[in-house]
Image (cartoon, rainbow, N blue to C red; front, side, top):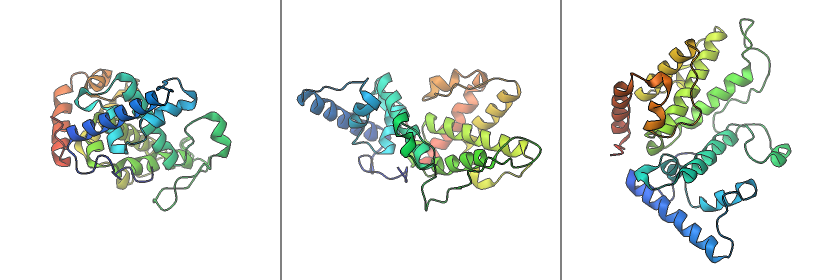
Length: 248
């Protein structure tokens, strides 16, 4: 998906409306597969049934599923939606994501006309570190893709966590290479800045992050979030109001 903010099923809907539309679409797909005599199979080859199940969802609706908006989705459904969203991000920014037997057919380059960096050089940025141009380009491109997301997706914990993770990686890489940070790759949303600072402090203390954070419970289970719950919640509430999705 080149434009993560493009909407179909979720156009003009509230947070709860997006979730309800996604639930209805998925239930219709479950019923259709049942009627065909080939019911949904979670273990289908290459996740074929996952894509069929969620074929009617735009990225905004996928975000509602992955974040379990309204408590309408199972743990497996959340995981499937998250996987598809991560795959969209990787493919759009020039990284293979999907069945290994298709990797040889993949062109390792970000989508053209989107403003992404095409520098895939393994040369190091400076003699101060082993940070490569390709690594920095990857962080820059993923930052840009996530920043193009719609307002609802940006209001989710999953987006905030991923965006903060990418920003942290980018700033750490630029620091290691003794290069200035380009502000266009730094989010202006307060929740991202707060999470990124907490992540950087955690890295200094050699504390890692769980790669899969989809909701507030997941976030507050992070070791580095302990003791900062109230501040994080306040920043999240402010950000959601600014985006127009209170998620109440």
